[in-house]
Length: 293
Ligand SMILES: [Zn+2]
Image (tube, rainbow, N blue to C red; front, side, top):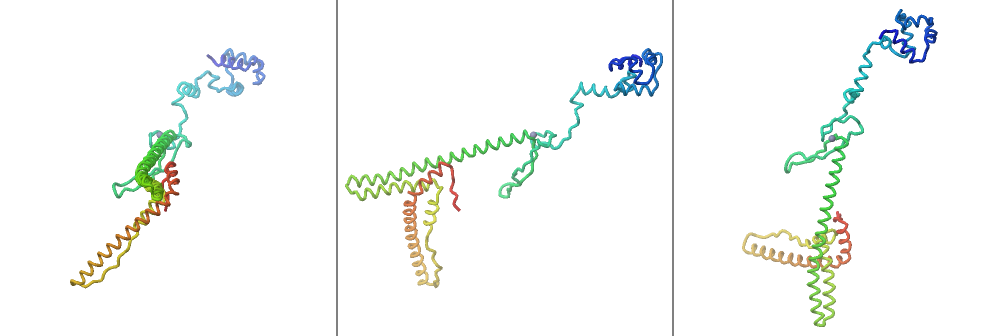
């Protein structure tokens, strides 16, 4: 296709007559007619004017293929390879895929154990994950926490069942004694044993539930004892006999104190446990552990 044909094509596209175009370019319409018939070629300056007027390049006016349309065509045919180059911002440490968008980068600190055995320690490492991997990690952690919590509550339930069984056995023993007294017609003793049965139940339960101050108090009172001072003695028969005597006396004394401590601790705990037991049971059902300092 010659330039004349092109000029005509562009002129018609713009809905211009030969006269219109001639007027715009300040030439005669005969000149336009001659260009279009390829009789003469317009000057370079006129061609430039025409290109501006037709909103095209000189190459297009000459009907030449230019570099630009080729690229556009390639993009149209192959949008992936021609897509704008994205800058990689980070690499996911989980799936190793590159991350291109800053709002998809998930940074967090992870506790990792270093060393082995006794020397083992934990260290905080910063990690970079992609959004998808991070969400998976969170979901996994939530699942693990749920399982842990379930196992924990299961442990509390087990302890509760144990407390019912053992306390009932202990209480049953005192109820049995009470019933015997009742049969014998000794009312006072019967009432005493029934009261003891209730206390024995609550005390044993509190000891097994282990989530109030009762077990700790009981243990610490039982630990009360006497510290014997050092014995000064001479290294002869009398001295050694004196040492043996003092040691035996000390042993007997601490045995008595231990028994007294044990009885006192148990009686005090039994009385208190009647009031504490409802809290102990409530805490166990809620899964609350002892939080005493
Ligand atoms: Zn990932």
